[in-house]
Image (cartoon, rainbow, N blue to C red; front, side, top):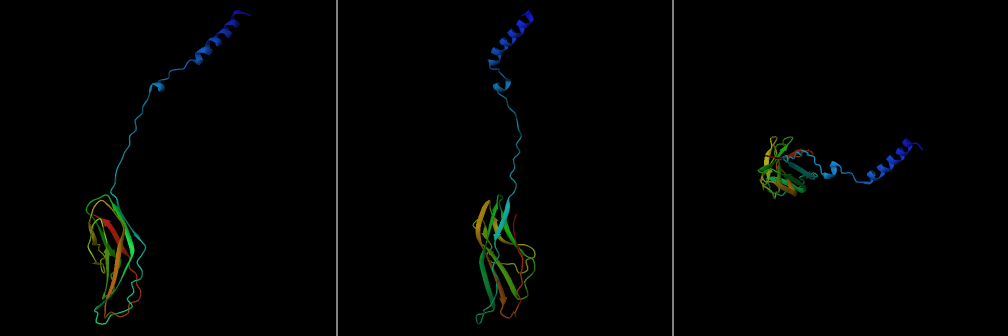
Length: 168
């Protein structure tokens, strides 16, 4: 064998032990990166209703009564807010017929109910609950009352859209 051939065998044998020695890489000494995280809490004002009230039909009259009325308490609402001094307002899409009234009452544990509020011609929102603070009101009762003067003749079935808004 020539001398050059002997060197080729010798060099690879020297490299094998070097491959068995653990290498120290800079990543093993620790590394770090930075990230920017942006956080924000936006105003929350959510109100929802459960269903619609039943038909408010006046079908009976008591003698000597000046006003006839019927009520429904089957609708519920829930709301949540992270703001203080909120209120719930109500409006109706079309005024009620002459001699009739539509009232609404919202119960509340977070604010103060304004009791039975006449929304018969409330095209502009009117307050129904005020002084609501941060938190939630869940499964609260909505009472609708439809009233008609005793001298109102027959009125065919009509519908109204009531808008409830949680606002400042």
